[in-house]
Length: 128
Image (cartoon, rainbow, N blue to C red; front, side, top):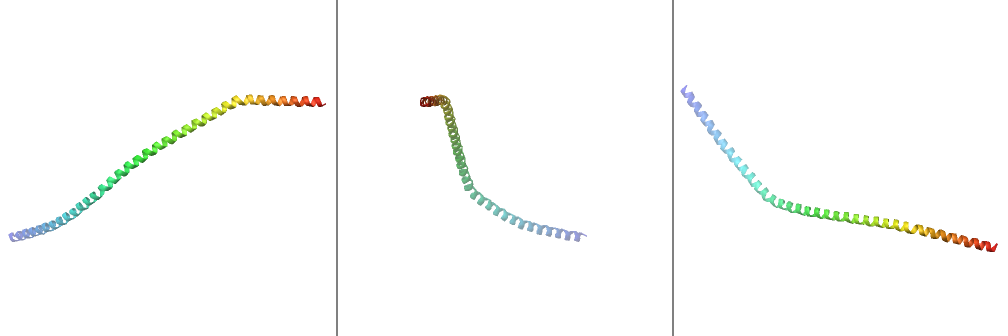
């Protein structure tokens, strides 16, 4: 029985040795894969930094353009408000002029029409 136990120990130790050798080869492969991944990450980082710098520059330019557009929109709004005020002033002026001139002109035209009617009636009476 002791012989069988000794054989089992030898088999178990051999299996353990084979397992350790296999684990060593697997760990070597994992290490190689991790080295490749590390290299790829470093390469990606090196390539990404200029992209991020360019994005920062582009973002600043977009911000500047947006601010300029906002300023231009404000200028256009103020110009439109100024034009509206001018038009309102012109309309008010037109209404004032019309109110002040229309009545005297109509009275003058009415008076002239009455004078011409009177003259015409006078001439018609003189002829008759």
